[in-house]
Image (tube, rainbow, N blue to C red; front, side, top):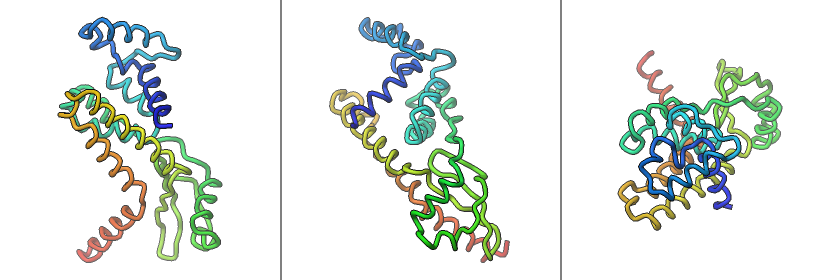
Length: 219
């Protein structure tokens, strides 16, 4: 399953002319140039724009784990180059929201019968990203923001992260020169960051601490 996901990711990157981009093809040995020419004829290939722009489009197509990977790489111009890192820094994970009915179903699965009491009314989402979306709700204490994870996003991201970590180990094993870039450490850092982001208790705890500080300071 991991290899299938890696093949799929490779195909998407190839269609966006990222694996063997035209920008570096002339500097590759002839087998690399030949592969690059073949990849350019894949169905649905996109060759317009700078490599960073094409990379961003490919990562958006691959899903939230890859969007986060792009945002991480945007902080590493030493790896990507300044221009590509700048293009990746514009990578957003805004996506269409899922339905209110599906949001209510998610809450029901999490809180069972208490869901109807805790969240009697749920408005349309005010913001949506690749991992979760935010709804405005009314409580006795006033309006609050309710963040709901996308259905199955934890499972989907977990699978993609596992495939990325496998790929990082393969790269380090097969290409010793890559070890100076520490791909395994980078993949593990990304996995740790995303796993923490998926646990909304961390965000809720941080928000509570911030509110308490604001209250104590009299703002």
